[in-house]
Amino acid sequence: MSSLTRKPARILVVDDDESVVHLMQEYFVRAGYRVDFAQHGGDALTLVQHDPPDVVLLDITMPGMNGVEVLERIVALHAALPVIIVTARSDQALAQQTRALGAFELVTKPFEFSHLAHVVTAALTRSEEDRGGAG
Image (tube, rainbow, N blue to C red):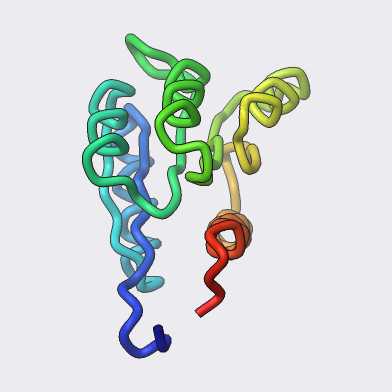
């Protein structure tokens, strides 16, 4: 598939903070991505199950199901789906735990959008290579 006909990658932002969701959505739409969002883990899992995105940006601290639980369930549904943890917790044990569970990377809030965009690009590149199709 040529880059002219390829659909833009779809990002699912999962965060209960509406301002964070809005900022990420605004940034990534401007960068040419399609962006969906969920404010709760259950909503995110429904989207992943029925219409999997290309990458997930997942907060850890949310009401109800926390991000670690959501990560475990996403990996169970779609092991190859890259999940990037985006959290205010700069906790080395959390980073190790989420990577062991299958997260692609952990990015600490506040972050530079250029850094987060770089991580998203790396995750999408690896995901495409894992599927065996680099275009």
